[in-house]
Amino acid sequence: MLRSCLIVALLASTAFGQQDRVRDLAAKFDGKVAVYAKNLKTGTIYTLAGDARVNTASTIKLPILIGVYTAVAEGRAKWTDTSELGKDNKVGGSGVLNEMSDGTKLPLRDLVRYMMLLSDNSATNMVLDHVPGNDVNKTLEKLGVKDTRSLRKILRGNTPEGVSDAGRDPANKGFGIGVATPHEMVTLLERLYKGELVSKEASAEILDIMKKQQWREGLARRFDVDVADKPGALDHLRSDVGIVYSKQGPIAIAITCYDIPKIDWSADNSGYLFIADAARFLVEDLTH
Image (cartoon, rainbow, N blue to C red; front, side, top):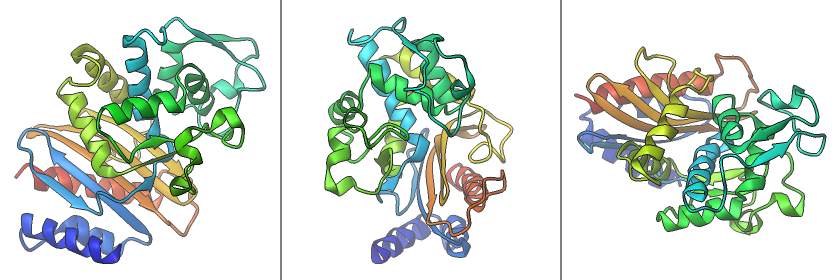
């Protein structure tokens, strides 16, 4: 893997001239990184281990959302379908539904917004009750996305109904709730931007939801323009995937920082800072 990283770094350095600021930043980072970015106007790309399979953390919620919109469009689910909150579907971590009253009924339309806007884990699991991981993965397969997969529910992955077929595959052991490559995440973002996923209206609605999500420590940190993104976080990982709508053109970016030695749940986690600084460099370099 080290050899392949060096090769893509050399290719990126050639494309960017003698200085590759993202590679230099990665060399100083205490952990590993995987980066892929694309100028959606010019087609110029940047990759640094961009085809590495990485743990998605909550960034898998974007492919799940695409799977839900597809299921609704095909009549396999309805936005008015409801879930009832209770002890069996409340889980910890990010979000607010864990604190709401048992018996509260929520439509699928609201659940996907809790999932994306607040990265609510309970909402995500309830969304997967309506559109299971296997269905999400079939949608991804039809889209030609071969490595990105929803693997299991959050904190419910040991139950039979909580694991997708991909989650049972030994090749995906250790990837948590999802696996992806930065390259494939950018491909999904580009197709959303072009209005090619589900429908032009659905693609635009998905991006609009992403623009409103509340966790802004990563890609959006250094910008005063719209950023449509979905971040993810684990003890030793930070990731973010999204589109920065720079004045010079839209830049789709997917970055995962992993094997971070220090556990730090502050806004200044080293992974967040890397993502923020790398995103600024990528936007500047890909628009010049």
